[in-house]
Structures are given as C-alpha cells and as structure tokens.
Amino acid sequence: MTFGGNLKRLRLIRGFSVTEISCSIGVEEAVYTGWESGVGEPWLDDLRLLAEQFTCPIDVLVDSSFDYEMYVEVLRKKNMI
Image 1 (tube, rainbow, N blue to C red):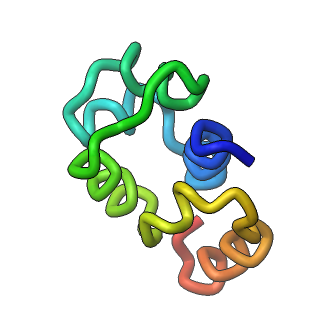
Image 2 (cartoon, rainbow, N blue to C red):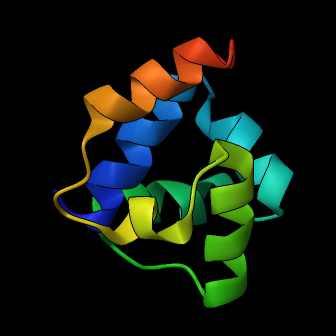
C-alpha cells in the first residue's frame, strides 16, 4: 500500500476525521487530503506529528507491507479503539 493509503487506513482504524487530524497537526484539510490521495507528501516534522496522533512509529506510515490486522489487535488490547 502507498503512503497515502496507509495514512487513510490508519485514520479510519482510529476513527479520526480528516478535520480532526489536520487540526491536530496544524495543516489545512486540503493539504492532508492531498497526502491521502498521493498528491503530496508531508515534511519529516509532519510525519512525526502524524505518528504521534496515530500512536505508531513512522515506519508504519511509510511501510508498504505493514500488517494492519496485527496493529488493530494491539490497539484493541490497549483499549485504544
């Protein structure tokens, strides 16, 4: 999966809206939706903020082979979703 696909999937898993995520990291919604759709990519500082919001390492955001089912299970065990 692409970076944008990973980003969207993580947002949906965590139940965040585009507005919530974009406000929390201080970017416009159009910028954030561009990242999800592959129009652009965030700077490293924004990647760090995204990882903090999703409670995951930056690797998860950029890894095309990340196991989302395992991630969801870990979140459930920690009562985070």
